[in-house]
Image 1 (cartoon, helix red, strand yellow):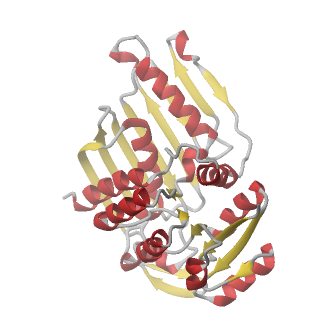
Image 2 (spheres, one colour):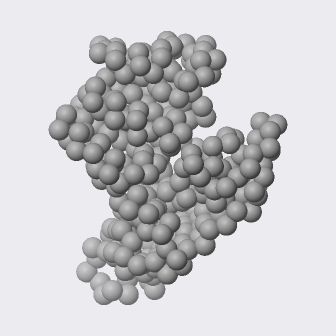
Length: 331
């Protein structure tokens, strides 16, 4: 049976979703964008159909949809998809409204749908390996000195592909674009924030040249936070849209154990532990892998095979949004 999938938004993320769907196989794709020329160009490149947003939402044969539009459009689009009983995967963050997230989540549960958010790093082998290692450290029978007690998360990039990425009223900025990925990993590893020590937000480049035009930026392009989590880990996260090239890594450590990992294949995963039961120390080199293939397989298997959905859920997004709101309100 052919799986019919709609893709709303034909910008930078859409081809990544398409690569994942096409790798799954037996998928018929339909694309849509408010700029029809963008939809036509993507359709020609990947041999898809083209429909309007309304046509995709109202098509009874399209039951699975990817949302690859700017953040400020998500609430309306997702609400309409859920009301029409469509499963969806949406680029992060799903929403900046707690009440709307709660409402969407309630409708998803009522209609027995899969609603997933694109926190892609949970599918990286370095971070899944790190998660298993951290869980082993926590479950070991050794004293508390074995446990991870501090962590540093770093992510940065140029951030100049789209004007909305630097506009507050369009939910742009380093927090929504970059920090959220590291918050997701932090919460996955160590639980929610229980205390905030420090928050720094800055705009280093108030004017940017994007696609040959000057964009006046009013959203932060750098943020640093220091927090304590539910598992009593002191965490520092730096995120920016000012680095000359993409960079990302995580370092977690305790007195007798440590983990370093990255989405970048040039940075090996290093696991260190004095306790031989924890399979350390060890170094793992990861070859390049298209994480969207793994993400879309997981998503489609949850929908089509009724696999348990416990990654990148709406509950995860609610936790992340709670953290973001606390960070934004910190004085």
